Image (tube, rainbow, N blue to C red; front, side):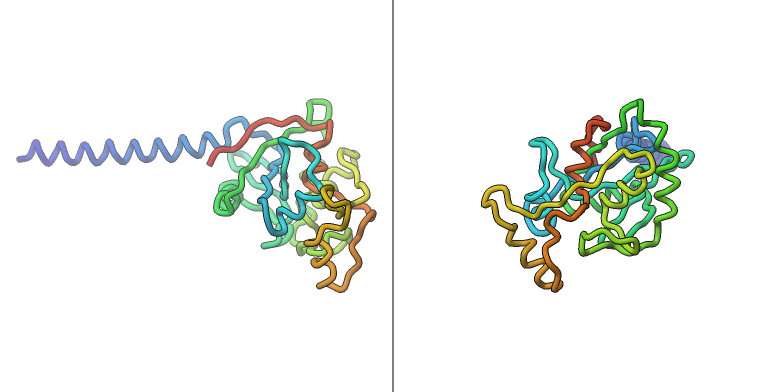
Length: 219
């Protein structure tokens, strides 16, 4: 009887150890190979705001993004500096950031500055931390009091001219006319569609020749 109880107890311990190892391996696989300053691009959804952003900005067949953040490694901890509709400009634990994207059915793809540009990362992260706490820019028209995601990243690296602002377009490439979503979007805000005004977007940043694509983070 005592032997049976000992065996059951041993099985419970082994099961607990196995589960713990499984959890740790999953966590390690997510952060494995990640470096300070890596850029985390979030894949676009096919519909809604995400789809509308992608419709007028996609530049590459294998790159379809609607959000971006920069990774900050602090000791053994990983954080993401980013501007999001929920929470504005923030410093979020990487685990929570990845969970949010997974819950939305989106995937995170890691890009990295090429070696000759790596020296710009410390000042970019420092700048990013000074921009925390600002509200999200829901108009996607540049201003100094609120930021949208790619705007946040462009500003972080602006001192070193890593990315550049370009004339924005809201033209649907299939029709040659202003995308219907954006027309209604700005109409509701009583704003003119900012066609041609300077701005940036995740797909434009991903197309930079200063970056290289590293890997997909598996959830």
